[in-house]
Image (cartoon, rainbow, N blue to C red; front, top):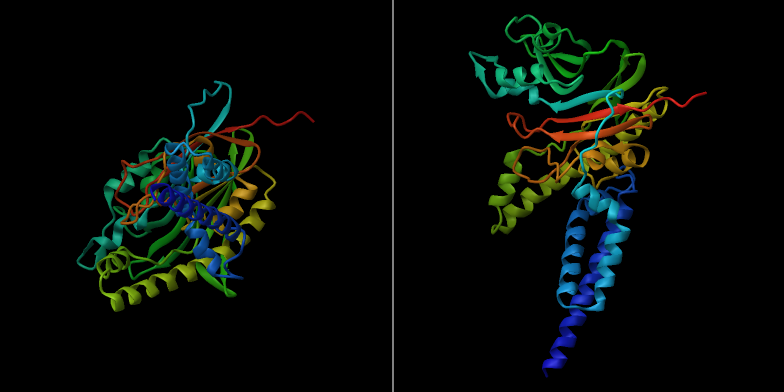
Amino acid sequence: MTGTFKKIRRRVWLILNILVVFWMLAGVLCMQVPPSEFWPAGFVALSLPGALVLNFLFLLYWVFRRSWLLVLPLAALLLGWNYYGRLLAINFAEEVPKEAKTLQVLSFNTHVFNAYDKIVEGVPQVSNDMVDWVATHPADVFCLQEFYSRVNSIEYNNFNRIGTRYGKYKFVSTLETDRIKANLGIVIFSKYPILQGGTIHFLNKQRESANRAAWADLDVNGDTVRIYAVHLQSMSIKSEDIENTYSAIGNEESFKKEGRNVARRLKRGFIARAQQVEQLLEHVRQSPYPAIVCGDFNDIPFSYTYQELAEELENAFVKAGNGVGATYNGPLPFLRIDNQFYSPGLRAVSFETHYEMGLSDHFPISATYVLEPKAAE
């Protein structure tokens, strides 16, 4: 009887393991499918981390059982190794030659420096601590999304406080908003001269979206590097939505209502970002210079958005980072939605997520790149 029970248990675990492997395959395949053409693919891809973790747990289970069946999760792990690398990066420090040309890039969604979280007598007040942290960071290039500045205010003119005061060059892609004429959008600051720049205005169902990408060509001691600062369509999910969903557990009707609300917003985001990343990559492909594409992509590494970028560009966190690299500072843990990608001609040698700056809903990320010597003609 005991032997029969063991056989049944083993068969059940084997079937479950096979199902997890098929789940993994489905998730990988769905990352290749544009959600704008088949939106359910976005949700399947979103679930892939769960399959990756379960497959690893099955590997440990079969090892513990000393069963030859460990070959199944082991084969899946080896075949999907690149996707595990998106979950957890392990890299060793690289020594950079003194003669090498380097470029350190900081990317940060500043959440308008929390200006609208603190309003005094009807006037937004920015976080001085956040502005000062950015202004004094040693990076060579600053790609700031949800940038906020008040042109007619000496105290809150962040163009001056971050840029002019420290002799930085800047490229601005902002909209004028609210009654006190504040500028909101994307700004690229650089210690190196900016040769030219522009804005990619994303289309959403043939209408211009508030999200955008700015680009600037920098003269880095005689070499030209193109920098993209990107802000793709938001998930449009607030902390309250997540908290409401958690609190609705146990109340079937309320949970379904909150769940449908979150699912609708995720669906809209999947579709919009799929269109935007295609428009972005079309521009990147035409760059005559090595490019760094960084910013708030509002999508995890298991998405069509990330997959499209990763097929053509390297990811600085994967190549030079360590740990899980979570960048979302909110109620959902372990989300990495801010990234830096780069093209041939550059090499990432270090990457850091700045958890010490926790005043925004995103953590800043920085990477240092080596400009590879040009091949002799």
